[in-house]
Length: 359
Image 1: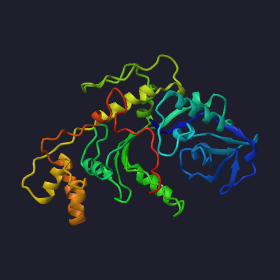
Image 2: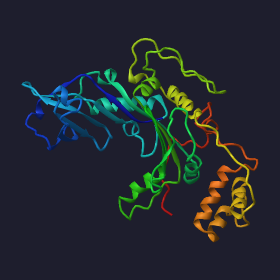
Image 3: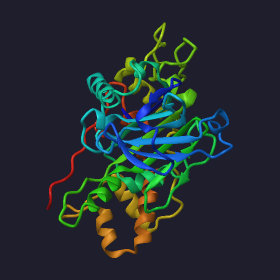
Image 4: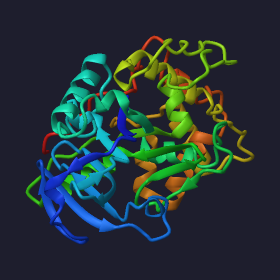
């Protein structure tokens, strides 16, 4: 469920081995590739006498840590302002896969402690949550899903959706404390494979990822870190309220897969059902769209859209695919809560994804 987790600390640490470095230097520290730069003179940390900025990145585990640094008589004082953890990589999962169990979360946090052993003891319990990405993969057609959500709204984001460059295949809903992203995850993985060289012929089958990037108060409330002790209310039938936060001190290591899954369903419930409309006249694209909804096939087993794609203009094919998602010929409305039922992930959810072997 968690893809990226960003934490921050308010406790500075002493790094005496960095005293001889100057802005612009690149070096290796505790296995991390590090860059040292300067902060803009009028920035928040520069006004508090933190003129330098240290960024460290581990390419294997995906851990990134950055923050301000300043010189002192004892050495270099470093304040880890952003600690970005790639939870799937830390849990030992392949690319594109997501952790879904408490055991995988514990494994990721234990691995983070080992990699960041040079931070103060108990840093994972003291850190504050800056951002958490709740994600799920779905075996749904990317083109149709993007067209379906192009004009949809989400209750937690007041702004309209933003469609990126079609080459990236993604839609964003940008809010103040939450960003919702629907994108073609298989395209991203296949592009990464293509960069390895022409000899690599494995590919991922098309699938989507719907990601909720929660920041600041939205993230802390998601992780039961807020001050209020009542559960999050829900007015939607079949969606129970989240469990009340655990009394007392709360640690990031106390999160569990069940709470994250419940929070994800709450965010899904704020998507409206897909509105459909009646076709005004029967055209060839409309007839093909009805065939797509009804699952028409030819004698050779090919679908009606494949047959239409062979003879029609590509823009007419795209129009027929869009109509199949928007017109009403008796089919059910699209509802995310049916894709992710309360009893489990559902048939179309994909916690584990594997590339297809070469043809």
